[in-house]
Structures are given as structure tokens and as C-alpha cells.
Amino acid sequence: MTTSSVKLYGGQHSPYVNRVVMALEVKSVDYELVETNPRELLIKINPIHKKIPVHVHGDRPICESLIIVQYIDDAWTNGHSILPTDPYDRATAQFWAAFVDDEFVPLLRKIGRPKGKRRKCWFSRKCLKHVCCLRMHSSPAAKAKLFFGGDNVGYLDIALGCFVGHLWLSEMMNPTYKILDETKTPCLAGWAERLYSDSLVKDVMPSFKNFSKSIRQCQKLFLIE
Image 1 (cartoon, rainbow, N blue to C red):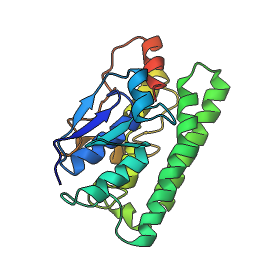
Image 2: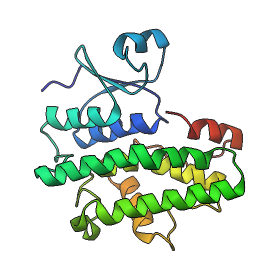
Image 3: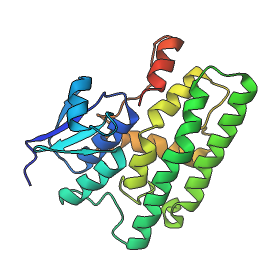
């Protein structure tokens, strides 16, 4: 399948755009990242939601990050499979990916906002509970593997992993409320480090570990969609 006409519309700091970037890199697809975000263009290529990311293959636009990741996995057979091939494992991965968007992400956004310490602490504890729950129940076999998807970066790694940089940013803004803690959550912290060190994604994923912006700029970046 030709890859010369693949374009991805969205900003490089958007975690949802990063999801698609990770999938494209896993499948070794040549693509163009179009950073500009004119509303007129979004109305044309994503008239329903008018949001990024939008993946355009030829002249056919595809919207919603997780749907785009699945499309990429189905459309390109090179590289390893992103979604599990077993029907049950595939459904389980899709369930937990939806859990990330429905339960985890709203809490992550609230931690990044200027709230009172008590509320931040509650959001942080609940966020930590969710990611630990995900790690425990998403795939029992994955506990002994490098990633949720096994020995290779998979669907759930992409679904959650696109927020790792923003978790690091959140911890920089609020050092008291760490989620990826080497002492308290060593498995999750190790997973995040392995993901960002993986040869397929390490050069394309934004890391905020050494970010030197002001808190106000950090908050604006943290809340980007």
C-alpha cells in the first residue's frame, strides 16, 4: 500500500496526535505532519467535531485517535500488529483503551489545573488507582512482558503512553502528586521509561522532563487536546 499520500493534521504536543504518530512509526509509514490548524480546514476534513487529529490517506479523512490507530494497523501489514490478533485479547485492549479516555484522562486534566491542595491530592490518588487498576487487569500475561502489548509496543501502550509526557509535566508542576513513582509504582515507572526508550517511538515523542517553560505556559500545554 502506498504511503506517499498520508497526512496527519494536528500539533506535536497533543497526546491524541502522538497516539497516531506512534502507530505510524510502529508501522513504518511515511507521513507528513501538518502542524497548522486552520478552522476552515478542520471544518472540511472533520466537519462533525472540528478537532485534531485527522489522518488523511489519499483523499479520505479519518477522525478520532483510537479509530485512526486501528485503521493504521489494518491498512498496513508491515511491522508487528498493534492490536492483538486474538479476539478476546483484542476486545480487552479496546475496553481498557476506552477506560483511559473515559476515566483516566479527565482526572489527569484536573491535576494539571490550579485547584486546592486537597482536591489535587484526591484527583492524584484516584488517577493513581485507575492506572494501577489498568496495569493489574488489562492483561495478566503482560505483567511479565516489557509492554502491555507483550514484547512490542501495542494498542494499549499507545492509548496510555501518549500521556506519559504530560504525566511528567504534571509532576514537574506538582511534585507532590507523582503518578509514575519509581518507589510507589515501579512497574508503571519502568514501563514509561521503556516506552520512551523504544527505538520505534523515542525520537518522535515529546518529553517534558527537562521542560523549562513557565507554569502558566505548562498549564496551557498540559490542557491541549
